[in-house]
Amino acid sequence: MNLRRVFRWGILLAVLGFLAACSAGEVKEESVPIYWPQLPEQPRFAYAASLRNENSLQPPSAAEKMRFRISGHVEKKEIFMKPFGVAAHNGSVAVTDTVLRRGYIFNLRRKKIYSFGVVGPAGVLVKPMGVAMDEQQNVYVVDISIRQVLIYDAVGMYLRSVGRKEDFERPVGVAVTGDGSRIYVIDAGGIDSQRHRLVIYDGDGQRLAIVGKRGEGTGEFNLPTHVAVAPDGTVYVLDGGNFRIQAFTPEGEYLRSWGKVGRNFGDLARPRGLAVDRDGNIYVTDAAYRNFQIFNPQGQLLLSIGEEGLEDKPGQFALPAGIAVDERGFVYVVDQLFMKIDVFRRVPEQEAAEIMAAEAVDR
Image (tube, rainbow, N blue to C red):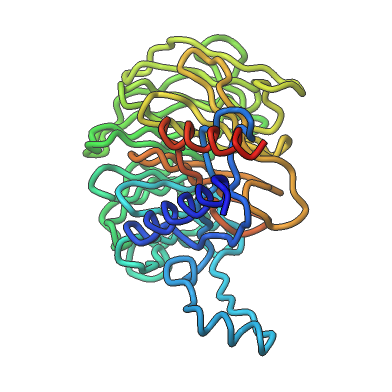
C-alpha cells in the first residue's frame, strides 16, 4: 500500500472521528478526499459531511446498506423543501425553511432533530428567513411575514420575540452577539421604500439605533439581505443591491466597505449568505458563481470554495443560500435546490503538510 493510500485512510478515520464526536452529518463515500485549494496547492478546507435528514445523524448500518443495495431500496426521509438560513454553535445547527414555514435544529451530540415554529399558542412561524444563534444555543429567527424576531431555546421551545411590526417593512436577516446582549436585524425595505437599513436592539428587545437608508453612499444600503457579527464586535452587512459588504462598529458607525459587481474572483454577482469566523474572516455565498468566497477583514480575497453542479455532489452547488461558521471553524452551506447543508472542515497545517508530502511521493 503506497503512502498516498495510507494517508487517505488516515483522513477518512479523522472524518469518522469527527462524526463520532459531534455527529456532523452523513459522509459521502468519496474514493478521494476533496480539498480546496486542490493539490498540489496546500489544502485549507476539506469536505466533511452533508446534513439532510435523520440519516445524516444516524447513518444506516453496514447490514442495512447491503440490504438496501440488494433490494434496490433507497432509504430517504427528506425534511427540507426550501432551506434558507443556517446558524451553528457547539454541536447544534439551526436551519430555516421558507416553504415548510418552520425551523429545524440538528443536535449533533444527541443525534436528534427538533422541528420548531409549527404549533403552539405563540412562536408559530409564517415565513422564516435569517437565523442566528448565541453561545447558549438560543435560536433567533427573523420572520418576514410576522415582522419580528422570534427566539427559541436549544430544543426549539419558544421564549419571546423582539421588535414590533411597525419597526420593519421586510425584515430578512438577523445576527446576535455571543452573550445575546445585542441583536442586529436587516430591514430590506422594498423597491419603492427608503427603509433599507440595519436596526439594533439590546438583549431585552429595546431598540437602540437605526442605521442607514436607501442609497449608494457610505452607510447606506440597497436591498441588504444579511448581517453577521465578528468576535471583535464588528458588524458586517451584505449590501446585496450595491454588491458590497459594509462594516460597522457595534453601535452602527460606518467603518469600511468593499466589493463590486463583476465576473472575477473577489467580485459579487448574486450574493446570498454571510458569515464570520473566529479569526474575523468573512464568508459570502454567491448563487451566480455557485460557491462561497472567503475574505479577510480588509476585504482581500483569501479563497473560493465550490463550483456549479448539476448533480448532487460534495462541494458542487446549484442554489447556495445561507452560510454559517461555528466556533471550531466548520463551515455550513445551504443548497436550496439539493435541499441540504454541506459541511466543510479546516485542514490543520500539520495535516496539510502530510497530504502534500504524500502527494509528492506519488508523483
